[in-house]
Length: 160
Ligand code: IDP
Ligand code: MG
Image (cartoon, rainbow, N blue to C red; front, side, top):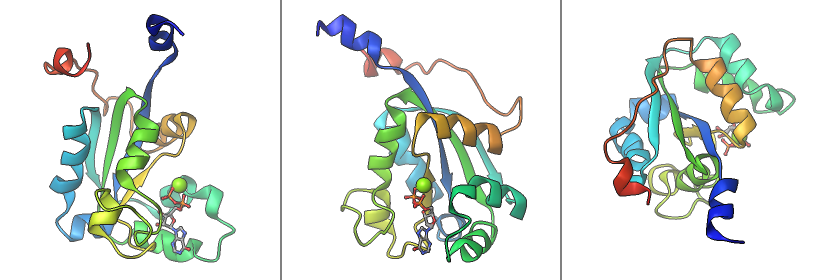
């Protein structure tokens, strides 16, 4: 592949990142946001939010048959969460790498879960698992007018 053809194949994606109630209660909000900021992705939405049960159930509907589902819904609605939308080329997979494995004991050091958590049921952060789910989840958690389109001044220093 010629470099310009490869560049044309990479697409700007959106991902939904959420700091779960344990991350908020433990004072990890700044730490977690800074990892995505420092990486160079673009923040397009941010709010502190007390999630209603119905929204948590809709967000995690693919897991509704799992035995841990009721506890998961209790956990996600147990206190405020920080909802974020992030944008960038390859942001979905890259954010999952920054977050680390679902079970924090299996998450590599250097990842958010690897550095900051010990249990699957208290793994401090969520990240969308595909570009399609990124779009779906951002539409689920944010209302119209809550997202910002903007051009970070650092962009020429991140992208050649
Ligand atoms: P992910 O958050 O890494 O994408 P998923 O398998 O999509 O992992 O599960 C969603 C969330 O459900 C997890 O982040 C975790 O909070 C919770 N969860 C998953 N598996 C278990 C479990 O076996 N026990 C308790 N909670 C679980
Ligand atoms: Mg998942």
